Image (cartoon, rainbow, N blue to C red; front, side, top):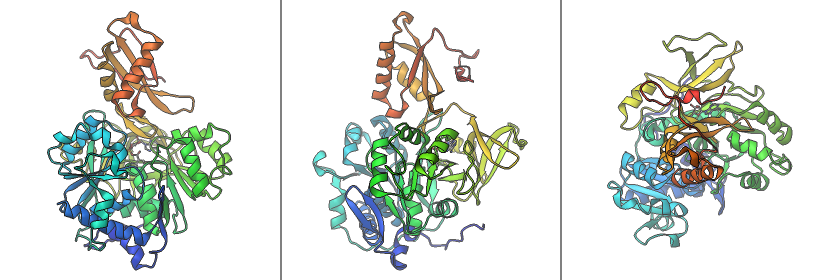
Length: 519
Ligand code: 3UK
């Protein structure tokens, strides 16, 4: 299918928000969140007010606005409001720690932070030092905050309800999404105005077949590239309804939404599907009897989970691989063509290749490094020249994944070419967990690798060398897990700790993690 031809003056807010009014869909429901329903007309007005409010705070074209927001109506309000004035929203992970947020504010140079009140304690100690930050706008309960912050509700009420979109082009920077790597801090993947519509057409429309009558629910939150497409741009591309849920996605919260809102499309990560299936009460009748298709991404979906889900929920799970850099899924199973245990075939509009270390194509049946090319690839990592050169080669992006293609053209995941782990679909750098462990007074050194649990999903496992080896005990292992939980985002802690006398190392002293991996 040919590339999308977008007009030279193009603003993503026009396509995803304002178009619905012009085309008579203003009274349709765009969003259902914990406060109720929002129509497309109401959402469009909120977006305008948000854009005007940000402008009123001094935000200009191309300047960043950091969004640390729980899922709800205010997420698309501020995301599109910022883009509509040509500013650059930067949604960030809501599960991080103060030190991470200090880095993101410094690196992005955001002038404004829009922050869900329940997350404000994580920022209390760092705001003073954020030298580029001028305003904090709180979302939700006003009582929870120091008085000098602005409140989104008040700003929206006071702002003008109309706003002309900034004259951006499809090639203007629209938003950034941070992605973690095996070394150093996360990198800001710079995305353009055209990218959102590209993914909505190529994957949302042509693979999922999303339609105006769909009700979608993504357990993956909107700050992930995966959740952003799932629950914001795909439904808003066609005028469908998105359900948002601010709480952590547990089997209970997710089953409640399935039961109460009866979505037609559900998106999750393998760990969540496995934990829902672990309770035999959960099925199509106690969930959504309208489900027509489900999606899994973030890490490979074990075959058994897909098969059992289909038996119990009567809808297939389409496993597909996407990335923050490519914005959404570029290789996938599709309705009527599901091969569990594989990532399917390339999504039309994207090209992939499997190459060896010399860059030569590998034959079918052998594993190679996966490269991808397509119209939603980010243009670079912000202020990271070397990391950008390592990853982006002309139109091609090196994913860091290894894959095998079979003779029929289906691709099977074969691991990473670096040490990075996907835990519940979210990146974890072993270095970061190792550093957290070695900060403990009892620990001399540590090595962290992936270890598969009973559902065949990868979780971190730590090999720990103690300063005094005779202190090794189950109680100390538990204490170390708690110690890491207190310092890093909760999904990063090691689920298993094995005390060892020494770690395998190269002659130059680098830890050989591959020797600690099983298989
Ligand atoms: C891994 C998978 C096997 C793979 C994402 C859908 O996960 C997303 O983005 P991230 O930047 O991570 C990208 C990396 O995750 N991965 C993702 N999906 C699969 N591995 N099977 C899969 N189905 O290592 C990839 O390089 O966090 C997923 C849509 C948008 C996304 N950003």
